Image (cartoon, rainbow, N blue to C red; front, side, top):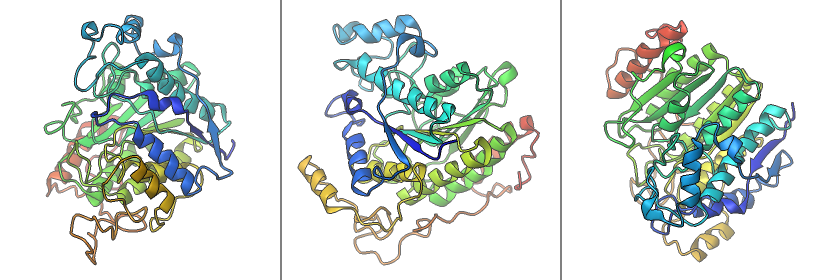
Length: 413
């Protein structure tokens, strides 16, 4: 298999524009690609830029109803009659909505194709990860579910076991729904508790249906979970289940709205913790899937301080080696941020450690212990259930581990 990694990109992605006041601003994609370029990530010999083609109807209907596609096509002409979750504050209708959405879906299929064909070991589509869209309904800023479409394409091409790990702060409900009765797909979602956040699903008791019972896995994290807690939960659930399932391909949704400054949610990760999650997923892809890793974007609404840095770390991880966290932010990129009209504090480096805007106060000498410049420290999951986080992890393990022949009370599993 090739050691080259594909980065799927087209400026047409920026046409997925829900409006100036909408939190899913496409500038986050432009700033990510600009920062990755300024830091030399896109110039690496291992990075190959691949331009996507829009997904056609045959691809889109692997997941969506044909009648829904027609609704999306016609919606810009009469948005007030659209229905199907459209023309809402979350999912406003915008010009060429079908075309922009189909291009992103095509990008995620292109990523899957590059990996499944062996042309590339890893592939990244930062515009992808629109995981809330349902079969005939837009939801949560998502029109077409590119993640589910790319997985369905892999199954159509002969993949027998595909694992999907979703680290977005919101439950990956649309992907879970698409494969809820398909034992060939293991979906694992780590997210803020549905008791406190959209979409209100993702409880540990959601396990799949029929022959697929046990292939839907949900870790519902308490608000305020930080790097150490999140990584503890991840390592207590994800590696053991992936090893039991033995996937041929790993598809990940790498939403970075888990960041402590994200305006739409209440987890407390840093970009250092997010970087550690990408490294862990990368390692599991090599351990279990011969490196076959399809990495998609997702949520993330810190347009300057979070998304560009987090996904530059993702791109770097996928194309060879991570960017050292103490790497300074290039002056040219700071100038671009200013030229785009942002006045927010720009981070000094690719780490949250020592940032002048750190929430502990300007110039704080000691960053929180959960933010490290290598990988944030985490402690193993505590089976005694002494904290809300421990109890959340235990609920997931008790619900699903026995279905995979694993011992929910054994921290070694």
